Length: 441
Ligand code: NAD
Ligand code: RBV
Image (tube, rainbow, N blue to C red):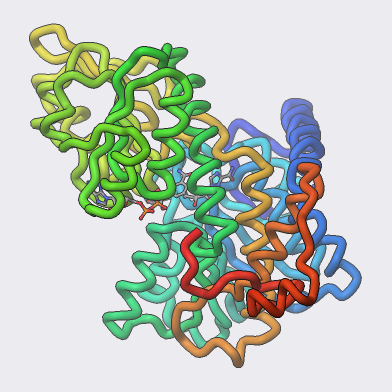
């Protein structure tokens, strides 16, 4: 038990109580199962645990506080770091994971259903290291924005940030182009083993999990619209089609729209698709995708959800504040809205990311990829910071290949090895990297 309370978790969990102990036991069991499913992360732990490379490093993290993230946090600590953590979304915390960490004396500040005001206050609490943090781990850019805009006094002691998701990378580039990025940033999202796996195969599984846990809806036979056919949209569209839905895509990018149609999806606009679809999934990372005019013409029973990072894709505010539309909560994070003519639609997770609000986010195995990249990025920033003046960087491809290798063995994959002659013929080293930097996976 902690002497001084340096954590903030769900109010109903009182550490030390019988109920809390049961919650923590449940977290421990989930963590034991998840560790087995995170072979890459556990291998990095084994590789570095004796050397303790993060000794004296103070890491502030802002990333969904799930069971997988608890294992990332334990890994950073085992490698020597001091860690303080909050979640990057008000609905994504698994309260048992937060309780488990707080009970171990790890300063975590997150609970499912926190308010916006509490969210930002918790980010502030994670910066309360003596003399501030040295490293940031961010997911979506809120922590980075908080530090750069509200606590510039902390910048001199920060060696850099590693950013988890597409939306956070967009925000970093925006700052960079405006000349407002005074720290190094490693773009974890664009490691191939991150965006081409987590964003795609992670969402492929966790989108359906979110929809099913929220609604018990039959997907087969339904018409589904997926807005955005990037890595996330591809995963979502594949998953819905696998269940038997007829999937329609909306896109702004002609190359991506071309990919969608070549993969057999109809591509049209939201204005065209809105009136006769049953399921709507936004996956663009852009704003203003599903607007009042779309919702007004949707058919009775339509289901709306977003899997993009921020709640800017569906105009949920219109549903919650329009006096002409009656709101009924079916259960937490499942809301029904009824128009005067009796038509109703369901909105999941209040328009925030459905897989983390209504389910538990991605499966552990794919998060092992993402979090290996996070650990390797943090190691680069901590041990080789001279290589990284302010700017945006990616991990070298050889490390990306290393992350992939760490996940092949448990899947029983037998990789072919180049012989010297073949390597010479291709002009690549026998042990990689195998592709040019601009190769498109
Ligand atoms: P991406 O850039 O690969 O794909 C987004 C696609 O949306 C692009 O092809 C783009 O052309 C398209 N698009 C943009 N504006 C549009 C508009 N107005 N209408 C239609 N299409 C539009 O990005 P991504 O990696 O697929 O990520 C998408 C979002 O999902 C981001 O916010 C990202 O941070 C988030 N994300 C969420 C999870 C999760 O677990 N929920 C996982 C990974 C990424
Ligand atoms: N994400 N984390 C989880 N189970 O902890 N699931 C998804 C989890 C991350 C994912 O890496 C994505 O880029 C980000 O959430 C979007 O906020």
